[in-house]
Length: 402
Image (cartoon, rainbow, N blue to C red):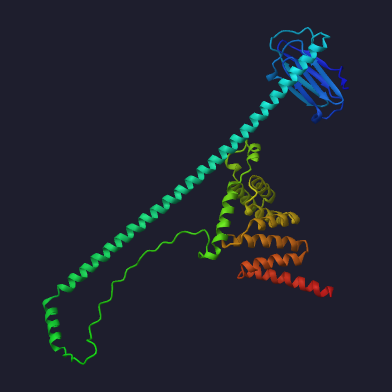
């Protein structure tokens, strides 16, 4: 059975009643307050304060503050007047039970309604976010299609113009060959007369070679590619998988975190904007600021490998070596499948993790990462020198051990 609190205090004015309930050492998180227009309950086991109010109050404008060992409840009155007392004077247990049950039922309905409204709001926000993403993707597809159509029309027009020029030049050449000057005609006739006769036994009749064709330049355009290498059928599936993962990463925005960051500007909630901010902080030597920017971007979107790789570089500068290894490893996990488009990113992540291992004097592990980076970029002279230096350290350690 709970212990009833009797050492409370209350004050009032014409519009509001203030009740001060001592919490007797209870923590604020363990205090449960139920307030309706005619009933008030403050529960902090094993203690209980219960009030059947003298007059109705406005429960929608009622408020409670818990702290410093007390609970201060403010109850705006429905009718502005002075109360004779705080609670009604009745010993009718059935009436009190009815008031209590009615109040608790209203309080549960209110909580259910608030929970339902929050769920509907979250659902509406998710729906709005999805619609905006679909709209942006549709606009992007339409823009790409417009560019393709414009290029197709331009190429068709250039081809038609080139064909027309070729036809006109061929007609002009034919006319010039038919309209020879009198001297050219006489010279041609004389050449024909002086030409030796061909016997029937000759195998072939020799003819003058045709004049060379007029040279022209033909403009050729290729379909743009994301990857710098040529298209190969054996790599199509891996390249498409990589592009799909990158598109999914750009769309995977943490909607719940956006609710927490609603006070920020819209651009400050964009992972790409935060990445640029982190890059600028890193370039200026503000490594802690860069870590914070990359960290917030990662909370918004955990599927962009550049964020982890760049934060690993910051941790290297700050000597947070284990964190640098963790971020670089996460970046390498996201940089799959290995394609030409992410080769440079894989080199950076491998070198950063290898550097952290070496600074922890784990040279064997560091050598593996540097060798992996060198396999991707075998012509990098600086990488070759670093790998050789680490290999010599590992070999020297092995010789000393033997």
